[in-house]
Amino acid sequence: MTGYYGKWGGAFIPEVLHETFRQFGEAFAAAKADPAFWREYEELMATYSCRPTPLTRADNLSRHFGGARIYIKREDLNHTGAHKANNVMGQGLLVKRMGKTRVIAETGAGQHGVATATMAAKFGLRCTIYMGEEDVMRQRPNVFWMEKLGATVVPVTAGSRTLKDAINEAFRDWVTNMDDTHYVMGTVCGPHPFPEVVAWFQSIIGRESRQQILKEHGKLPARVYACVGGGSNAMGIFQGFLDAPQVELVGVEAGGLGIETGKHAVRLAGGGASEGVAQGYKTMFLQDADGQMLDTHSVAAGLDYIGVSPILADLWEKGRVRFAAATDREVMAALALTMRQEGIIPALESAHAFVQAFKEAGDLSPDDAIIINQSGRGDKDIFTIAHAFDDPSWKEFIRTKGKEYGA
Ligand SMILES: *Cc1c(COP(=O)(O)O)cnc(C)c1O
Image (cartoon, protein in one colour):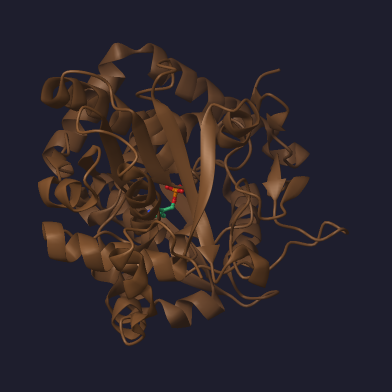
């Protein structure tokens, strides 16, 4: 069935949006079939967002763990500081093709809002960003930049005043304004064709990584690690290696304060999620027995989400992608180590992938390469990191090289 990945995905949307989705799907299919479109996209990303991003060989970290040769894919070097640019700029080109003049988006932490406002400024589109009132207060700097970039930020006061309420408001706007407005989905979730569209634009990460690792290391990596919020940076890099069964793909979710505390966002790595339909698609959601969505927690705002990509749910069910979780404390340890050893500051989200790679690097040999996808840069996390570093309980992780840590 179109729009399904195994039993996951679909398009559970109101009747009034059917025509808009059909047009969007057609515009996407036409763009995908047109080689000139991908060339235009690559050219835009090369001149506006520093692509291809480098693959950095992390010699000091490799020596520290004494196993695999560690490489870092540098999505942090994109314009606006994360892989989100790959998706929003791509959707921007689609908006131009469709002849629409306005974009809307919802954002929790604000990163997707800033990326969308940036794209709208560049392409001359009007832009409205929906954000829960709670998040508007928590994410002042991002709200400031969205407004200066020309976007209207609408604080949503309904419900819990966070991301899921903002999603509802954005959909309400779209239903009213679909003639001139495109909804810019931020990750590989939501109703078909969004997961497919976002995965396609993000595949640029995997295409580059595959070429780069073959050139640098002479063969494919043993493992590829990526953090998983909605799943777009993970799907982006995994697509470069899906057809090579010898490459193990590892998705890392937010373990928060630990699965046993209930304060986490672990959907596929045994956090108690179950099958459900919400926000227009079917996936594994963190919900209670009545289908009420649970409150999630992560030190990394970008991973703090109740659902997960239907494409990843399928790859999980088929056993093609292995899932793990990293706790907030482990994330701080991985960050501290990466900064000191390599002079690189990963985003809190990305640091989840580093944790799992660090736990496993020692089991491999220097003949094996591993790639960690650094989805974004950590500058935005300065206050969270400063606060967490006051409590040095994470230091044990580094001393034990992640081995028997966790007590
Ligand atoms: C938004 C964000 C994520 C989480 O989104 P995915 O769709 O899972 O990739 C991860 N890392 C960074 C830096 C982000 O900004």
